Amino acid sequence: MLKNFMIKTAHRSIEYKIIGLSDSRCKDQLFDMRVKNGDGANKGHSVAISVYDYFLQHYKIQLQYSAYMPCVDVGKPERPKYLPLELCTLIPDQRYTKALSLMQRASLAKKSRLNPQARVRTLIDAVGNQKDDPVLAEFHISIEKQLTQVEARILETPKLKVGNNEDCNPCNGRWNFNSKKLYEPTRIERWVVVNFSTPCETFLFSQELINCGRDMGIHIDQPYRLIEENSEFITEPVKRVEEMFKQVKEASMTQVQIILCVLPKRKNSGMTSFSAFISC
Image (tube, one colour):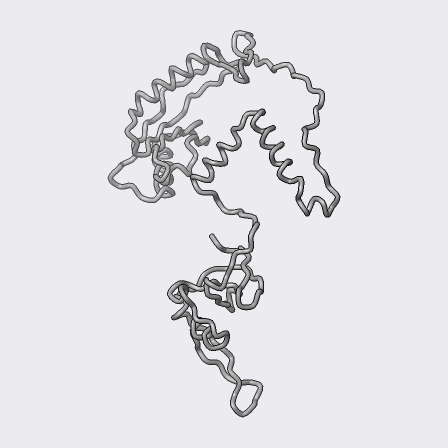
C-alpha cells in the first residue's frame, strides 16, 4: 500500500520513494556499514549494525516506538536503505493509484449519483472556496462564480426496429423488449450448460431459457448436454474450467455454439473471475 509513495525524513529533511518494508524489525534489521581502518587507509572494512543502533550512535536518536516495527526501505532492490518509521512523514497531496476499498467505492458511487441541481451547488461552492487561493492569484486566474449558460436542444430519441416490422420507442431512456420479437433472430442448435456446483436445477433453467428465446423469436434446441460439476472434488478455478472443456469435447462430436456456465453467487468463490458466457 505504501509502495512508490514519497516520504520526508525528520533527521535530514530529505525526500525518498518507498520501495517496501524490511523483513525484520528495526532493532534486529542489520546492514553493512563501512568503517575506516585505524591506520588511515581509505579502503576500510564493513561491519554489521542494526538500524536501531546506527541511529542511536550516529544521530543520537533514541527511537521511541518503531524499534519493534519494520523499517521503510527507500533504497534499491540490490542495495536496500532502511529508515525507522517514526522518522518518516508522508508528503501530502500525493496521487493514489491503487484499488479503492469497498467503503471508498461506495462513497465514490454515491457522489457520482448526484442530480444536476446538486452538481451545480457543489461546483458553485467549490469555486466560492477558491476565491482567496494564492496559487490562482499568482497565475492571475479568476473564476466566475456563476456557470455559463449555453443554448441546448433535445435530440430526437432513436427508434429500434424489432420483429414483425414494428418500431420500439424508448421510454425514460429505456427500450422495453417485453412482448417483442427480435428483428433477425438467430438459431441455436448446439449448446451446453455447465453447472459449477451451484444449487440450480440445470434442466429447468435450460427449459426456461428455451421458452424465453421462443418468446423473442429465437429457436433454441434442447441442450446437447447438461454437465454437473462434482462438488466433492473442487480444485482451483483454472483446473475446474479445464475439466469442463474436457467434458464438453468428450460429449460433443461437433463444435458447440455456446457454453452457458452457471457460477456461484459468492464473490470470493474464485469462479467469478471467469466469464459466465463463453462462446466457442
